[in-house]
Amino acid sequence: MEILRTPRPSYFGLFLLLCLCGVSVLPAYAESGEYHVKSAMIYNFTLFMDWPEDVLPAAATQMTVCVAGKGPLVAVVDHLQEKKTKGKTITVRKVTPTGGLAGCQVLVLGDLDKSTASSLLERSRTGAILTVAESAGFASSGGVVGFVLQGGKVRFEINPAAAQRHRIRISSQLLKLAQIVRDEP
Image (tube, rainbow, N blue to C red; front, side, top):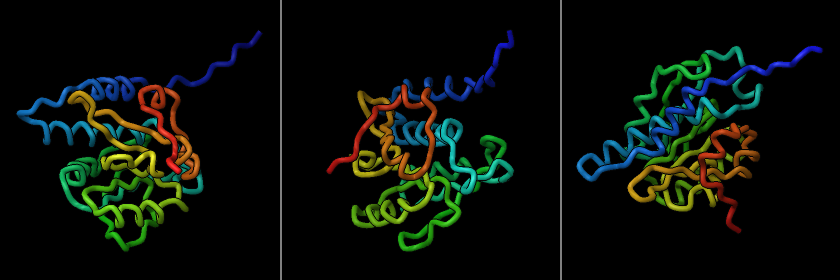
């Protein structure tokens, strides 16, 4: 009798993500520590999500993380430049609120007014783009991942319906760590 074996995923990234989720953000370095944790989590999201082959082919050599807006989250995402994820080199690219999103696999929204953020989110809906922000209610308003602080710890919400609309597959291990939210009417 032949036993079928499935390849074992690397659990190091998941372990790191678990550790980061439990990191307390102490007041002395709250902003710096909080945003470095968020940047590391964005990196780990790329390890535990899959994009469609037509958007991010297996043979592709790079993954593009686009950032819009200003603020500490956008600033620390720059640290992802040139890191490797799934055999691809991360390129960080700034986009303007009215600029194109072609070629973006991840879109991180920094400090933006609500209408600009809504416009970018709406324009991203037609692409296979992982959208990430830290504004309140982001995931429940159609974003894929939203950061929240709970008890001084960085947590994240995932909207599975938004991920499905964006054609992004999320690892079940990552979903177990997330707070699942639904679209608000």
